[in-house]
Length: 309
Image (cartoon, rainbow, N blue to C red; front, side):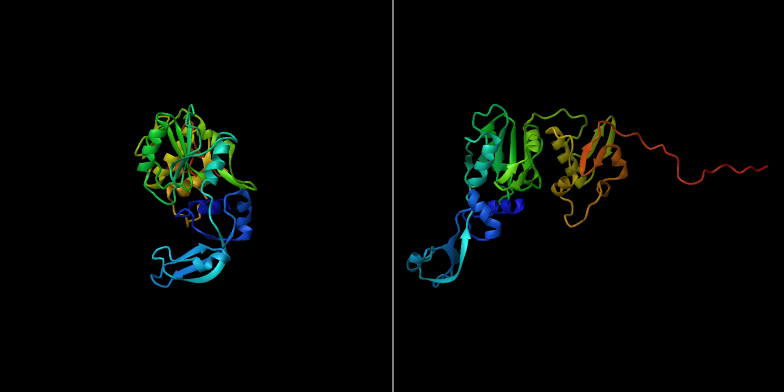
């Protein structure tokens, strides 16, 4: 259900009418995320053939004209529709990040909101509506102007295929990684979110760009292709204070084949990587020191030199 609500939030353009599903949508109409359902008609212009849906009261039908050419329209199928209250999610998250009196601030209409106050002493928190656009450069400029040298956490409505790197004071995190659904709507998981607000933790390993070599305790693990993205994301998790993180979430964000059923970390890395990376109960982390190389004897009966005498 969380992903469905995020999908509603990301649908564009703003104000798009959604067919009303009472079972799925009623709790969110009550919570204020969706507008009240209204009578809606499919409309087709007899002149320019423009087709669209419009919310129309019984008394308004005779006055409806084409929004493109003002021509006479043909009214079609009738149904109920709702639309997303765009500021609902930013406002809800702002109250959770700050306090009940906090208000979100729109920095780019329909795309970017600041959830913390302008005079936040340290970390600034933002919400970025990501599914509509992939170009991040305009937003990075806004972050720079708005927060200056302060640390920032950017909550994205969907995971980014390639989050910006190279700035230790900037963290991008997908909303579904730090939140869950309850009867009141989307709620931040405090334990996960607080890690993001802390200053970067001291790291005990080295993984510089282009993220193809992990150095730990004087030893090096070579990384290839998606392994580099996976380990960069794991590094960011450790830097934000997380001792461990979900390896399946990293797989999804690192761009591995979503149709493949991964059951083990060692489908991604060689067995040698287990000296550098620990994996247990769905969580993964970088070890504090490499495990010793295996010195176990070979399996099978021992071989002895045949006596020639």
